[in-house]
Length: 285
Image 1 (tube, rainbow, N blue to C red):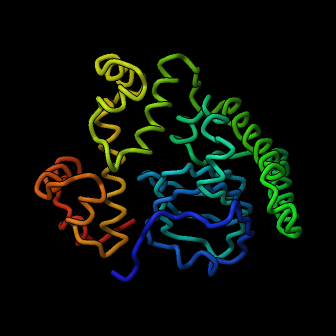
Image 2 (image 1 turned 90 degrees about the vertical axis):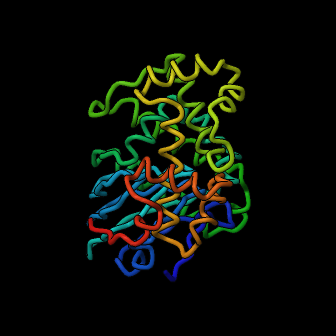
């Protein structure tokens, strides 16, 4: 395999582009990426067959796509008539404006439904957001002023949250104490999964007992904390196995496994085959 995949981030606070040709995205097709930045895409025409956090989906016209930091994405197919806007904000900028806090009330919904369709009227509002960023790039004094960009992004983030909370096609999501605990746990798990696999660590970080955390997460989303951590680890492992030439032992260590045989057993338990078998298996969409 020729391509070495690593976390995708950007060295500047933000970048914004308009894609009007499949050639602009061709180099990203069939290469899995682990995304550290925050990516916001608005599709105007065409379609993209993709996988976001291991879920297969299609991006189509008037779709707003929110790819949260620490997510996994892979493009399978891009139509020749594709037209879209995309804005990318660096991990440092996302931390600076604390997007997690801004979107906290609907973070699990965004993670579960990264693609949401909007009306023509709402689409014009999001296009205005991208246009403002385009104008900001033209003036260096604005690009370097985080407070101005922060204000623009805050308005956009609030509009995005409102879009999710008022969308009747998504299941109702109430910010109860249980949901709040799940949100906090999910954020921690996406941050520390490469170093901490033990649920006790997350319980301690949240100031909860292990039993209470496990019961709450199970009741809220139907999965145990261990199952959620395992799902994140497996998504990353699959991404590295298919998208890099790293050795399996190296991948195991990168994901926090000091014992290769234990990693092989863990992977087989969740995928049904060994990491080596998975790497050699042809992908069919």
